[in-house]
Structures are given as C-alpha cells and as structure tokens.
Image 1: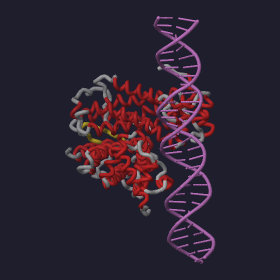
Image 2: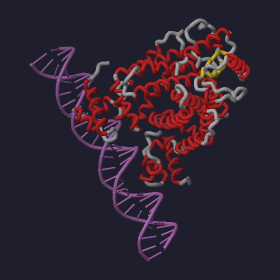
Image 3: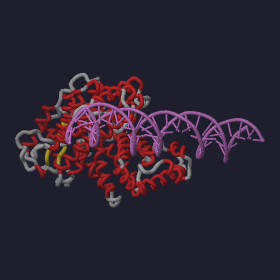
Image 4: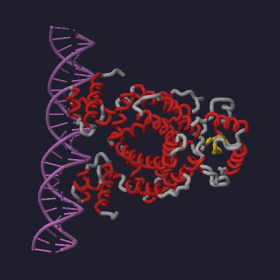
Length: 234
Length: 234
DNA sequence: GTGCGCAGCGCACTGAGTGCCATCGGCCCC
DNA sequence: GGGGCCGATGGCACTCAGTGCGCTGCGCAC
C-alpha cells in the first residue's frame, strides 16, 4: 500500500528514456542506471519491462473489481458496469500528461499494444464476470454478459482515445457518458421511471425491440411481431 | 501461396512438444531438433515462438479483410461484419482437433493468451475499419463502428469458446448464428423485408422497449408509450 | 551485542530473437 | 559441361529480457 520512492524513480527514468529514444531502443540496464538502482531491483517491482508502462493498473483493476463486488443486489447491472467504466476513465484523467505520454507510446510500439490489450482484457473479464453473475439463469445470460462487457469497454476506449488524441484537453467525462449512453440504449436499460416496480425475478424472457424514432407505426408493429415470434423457446 | 513442408513440420513438432511437456517448458531448440531443421529457419517462418501457435491467422485475416473489401456498396454493414465473423468461425471449424488443442494451450498459458488477444484485436480493427467507412458522416459513426465491432467479436468468441469447450462436437454454426442474431437485434438491423429502403441516414434516434414475454398487451402498449415519451431529446 | 528479517545488489545462467556469412542445390545462360 | 546467379538453409556469435542464488548492509527486538 505504501509507495516506495524507488518504484516511482524507475517509472520516471523509464518514461524519460522511452520518450527520448524509443521503447525498444531502451534497455533495462539503461533504466536502472538512470534511476541509480540495481538491475535486479527493477524486476522486483515490475515483472517485465512492459509492465513499467502500466504502473498502477493492478491497483485500478482491484479498485474496479471491489467497486463491482460491493454493488447492492438491486442495482441495475448494465448501469453498474457503465459506472465502473466511468470510474476507470476518471483514473486516467487524474494524470492527463502521463496518460497522453503512455498513449503515444502504446500507439507506436506493437509490443506495448499487446500489453495494453492484456490489461484491457482483464477489465473486460471483470465486467463480464459481474454481469454473468447477475444474468445467471436468464436465457443467453452468458452471451449477453460477454457482449455487453465488450460493448462497454469499446465505448469507454472510444471516448478515452479521442480524449487522449486531444492531448488531454477538454472534458473526458462528457464523451464517455455519451458513449456509454449509446451502449445503454442499445442494450435496453429502461430508464428508472414508471413501471420499475414489477417483480424482477420473473423477468426472465425479455423481448428487446429497437425501432427508429419517428418510424411509421406499421414498422413498430412488424418489429414487435418479429421479436415475439423469433424468441427461442427457452 | 505454396505450402512449404518445413513450415508444417515445425508446427507439428511444436504442438507435439507443447502438448506433452507444456509451452514454456519447450525451447525453440527442442522444436527444431524434433523437426530436423536448423534453429535459424524457425524464425524465418515464424517471427516469434508464440506465432507458431497461430500458423494461419495471417491468411485468415487477409481473407476476412478481402471479403469485407469486396462488399457491394448496398450491403447492410452489420450483416456484412456478422457474415465475416461467421466466416472466421468456419475456418476454425475446418480443423476441429487443431482448434481444440490450441484452445487448451491458450487457456493455460498467459503469454499465449496475450498473443491471441493481439490476433483477435486485428480482426476487430478490421471489422471496425469497415464499419467506420460505412458509418462515415453518421452521428457517432465512429463510436457505433467500434462498439458494434466489439460486440460482434464478443458474440463470435462466446460461441466459438463454447464450441471449443465441447471438444469441437456439435454444430458450431448454429451457436454463432444465434449469438450474432442477438447482436444484430441489439443494434437494430432490420430484417431484409419490406421497408428496407427508407433513407438510412436519418436512423439516428432509437427507442428501446423491454417487455416481459407473455405480458398482457395493455402493458406492452403502455411501455411503448412510456418509452416514446421518455426518450431524451438528442 | 547478537541474532533475525528484509530490501537491495551482483553475478551467472537460460532462452528468445537477430545479423552475418558460409553452404548447398537448382537453374539459366553461354 | 562449366560458370555464375539466386533462393533456401544452416551455423555462429551476439544482445537483451528475465531468473535463481547467494551476499551485504541496515533496522530492530531481545
């Protein structure tokens, strides 16, 4: 929990060298030489050279997992994972300069992109695991959980990247809220309005109808019929 | 285009050793010794030890990209990317035994999981690039492209993994079709029937209606009215 | 003081990946 | 047939990431 200054010194030295001469052109020996520590200590703080680029993702992932774990039973699951994704974006937004630097590195270096994918994959699996628990018993629950988790992560990344491309200028939260609203709309989170008090345990089979706003009514009816008849038996 | 037997020999030797003693416990020297070739030749065919686990993904990705590139202008974009995903699944299904072996490897070895993520990420970006081209000009077009691509890939992977977990028994296509139908429904691909020729550029706002199956019709109507009136302005 | 534990350090080692050059076999041209 | 070209392969040496092990120095309890 405490912050060893050695770790921060290694991160600072690594980023300085990565930025001025490139990631692959920088050896671990040069990093530890600049930081003034022994080579062996580097690998005690970071399991690999790539991990120094994502110094606090373990903590961030743990925070997000804890946030999901402490969800009240009656929270709307999709709302909750969107809130979790929003939380992750806020962690990025805490250090805009650092996040932008890292973005530029990961954009250029294929190896770092692979590392980032592993990191993001763990976030996505955490979201999916939460949704799987909430969707257990529903038809296609696991499928829905995986797809919604992927969509939330994609929306989050879309907003995050556009914010990073603008060098961290502007408000990151409005973009991510807009993106997440799109996902919520697509996957049918009903707005918390009238009719929210039906027995929720019996809402196993659902029909999701997506219609264009302003579409002619005959199209709406057609969609209803199609959705009702195409539902699988189970 | 031709198939050098040396490549296949390396893949066979590698998988034999990976399966009998584990991926990380197998060195490249052992692979080339079993295959009876020089160590240097291994890296001429595979840029890294991990790539021998995905021997034909470059070709598969190229096929999928070509399939998307040759899409007629009037094809429904979401339908097209779903068809592309279905095509990838068929390539997996061509060699069930090999796909199952690889699945077990990637499930156990974290390094291989990271490689697989990189591979899948390239598929997803190809799908997203296609959708971005088709959605250019639409509001939130890039966001929609990214989210739909991620959802399609997630649905595909969900079906693929459940098929792989069953050791390649059964029909892989029905599961993937069902999963992709869910995505299509969520993102509002209208079935190719009457009314498919309205101006598509105006389908920005959507209304999502969720109803219990078997609910009385008056509740359905009530939900429709509620959803229509509760939609935010933008 | 003495023993203990811990954080860092040095060193040697494995193994992936690369650059360079030698070799060998086919193949064209003369 | 001979000579030269070329692509595929093999061998070798090298860099560098990552690991195991033992040593040292320092704080701390007893």
